[in-house]
Structures are given as C-alpha cells and as structure tokens.
Length: 251
Image (cartoon, rainbow, N blue to C red):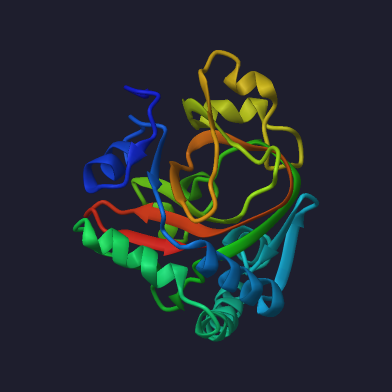
C-alpha cells in the first residue's frame, strides 16, 4: 500500500520504495531538453522498425510478450540482435536515452545494465510507443507469464517512460494503489491482456500528468492505464529488480 500519494523525486530511496509498492511513482525531471526530444523523436519515427500488438499503440521496437511469448524465445532474441543494432544507428542521429538513463541509475548507486538471458544474450531494451486512443487497465509483470525466462526471476518490476511528445489534451497516466496477485485474474477480460474495472473498484487512483522531457517510473505490477490521447509518444522499457538488488532493463 502507498504510504503517500506524492510522486517522488528520483533518488535511490524513492526507487526502492517504488519497488516495494510504497509510493505511486518517481519522476526524473528535465531528463532531456526540448531540442533533444525533437531530434530523438525524428530519428525514432524515421528509422525504427514498427510492430503492433494492440490497435491503440504502434510500437517502435519489439516486445518480449509479442515476439517472444506469443512466438518463441529464439525468435525474440534473433529480433533483439537485429533491433539492438538498428537502434545504435538511431542513437547516432540524436542521443541514447537508454545509456543516459542507465547512467542516472548508476549515479544513485544501482548496478544497472540491459538484461541478459543465459545462452541467448542481451534483451532488447527501449521501445517507442506511439499512442492514439487509450490503454485500458492492465499490469506488466513477467513473473505472471514468463516462467523459463530470466525476467521471471525478478523480485519486483518497474517501468520507465521518457516523454517525447505530449498531446494538448489527455494522455495522463492513471495508477491504482493495488499490486496484481493471481486472484485478480478472475477480472481479466477473456482473450485479452486487460482487466475489468471491478478489479480496482476498492482501490484509490492517482492521475499523473506527463511532461515532455521528463521520465516517470512506476511499479508495473500496479494496475495502470493511460487516458485517451492522440499522437502521444514515449520511449522506455521495463526494469527487473533482482534479488541481489541489481537492475536489468528489457522490453
């Protein structure tokens, strides 16, 4: 349960509290300038390969769920090698938000790197998400569905999003003070990834406005959604918090 409804400033203690489910979100302000946002957005929209699993989101990159769980581990890691190489070129046209964010995590004394899978190599880490519409209530938690993958061994899972383009209206992040547990799956809508509103009927909700150039971290095991928006563009990944306290980034 949250001990406060306040969004926390980026620091080591706040991130540990987020992983424990005690605070709703952590904000890293002014992660990038407006000019950096524009240059990276142009490079991303021009050169990134697109995949899509739901109608409302065009993914600029790949997903462990779509290209891995819905296909195969070998398919995901083959695509990860291809997309990791492609994103190196994208970063050369602007800057690497991934490396900058890893630097921020290391700057507050976390051991942090891109996640690796034994015998398979590095995960892909860092998707762009171009959103038109809304994202219904859902969770992202690899222990829920990824047995046999290294990411399922995490003790907690976070997500970070770097906001590149914000709609004039809407696009807020909606968070509920409820961490997923297996019994909640009775509320899951059949043949989908999202949940009926009843799953959070007794939980408090926090609306988090987003700002261009900021990064917001959440505990992705918390039920969350995104308000309706047009042309909202963000970039980020999941963060596996391992038992030894190290952090592994992946998408």
